Amino acid sequence: MLKKTVMSLLCLSLAVPALSFAETATHAVKPLTPHQERMKTCNADAKGKKGAERKAFMKSCLGNK
Image (cartoon, rainbow, N blue to C red):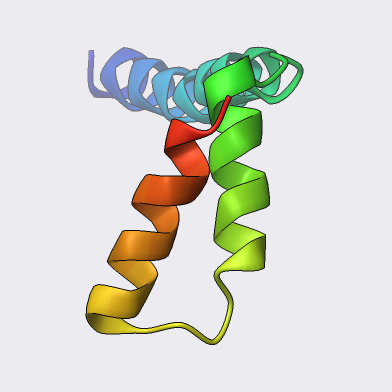
């Protein structure tokens, strides 16, 4: 009985990481939405800005379509 329990736990411990990896892999190939692309570009352009200046820049950048 103990041997079956240990084997079951071992199999489960090997299966869980494989399932989570498969889920992560499917999310990796999902393309970015236009809004996400815009966020990525604006964020790169805002490098070096801080506080209110960055907030105002991001609002302006994201508002321009």
